[in-house]
Length: 127
Image 1: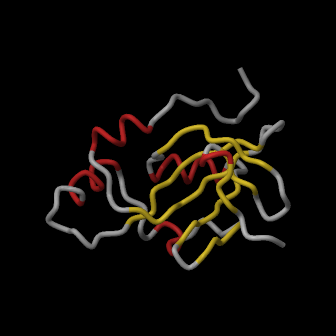
Image 2: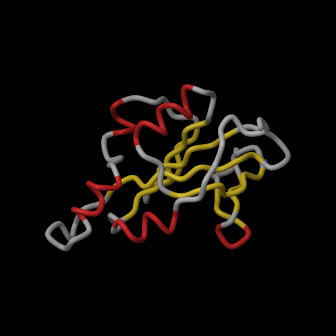
């Protein structure tokens, strides 16, 4: 199996089996992550040490996921070494499967988070 990677200028992910996942939206709140994964989404972590694919939704996976409000507070400069897991949502190309990626990043300010958010409807493929 190959290491997942961002492709197409970061607009897609190539997974360990070579499938492509297209970007849907940035910045999910913790409750959205839980709902998506319970609804069948794959959960992956993109960390400096490498990717972990198909990880369980547990306290370890969620320990560095923060709300938008907490990220904004951490980004104000008082915590320059803070690293969080920033969640994004992806859709398997040509299908209805969902992928949530938790990526190591520095905290973001409220305005940046608002710019990252796009409306979405899950499960995919339903009206």
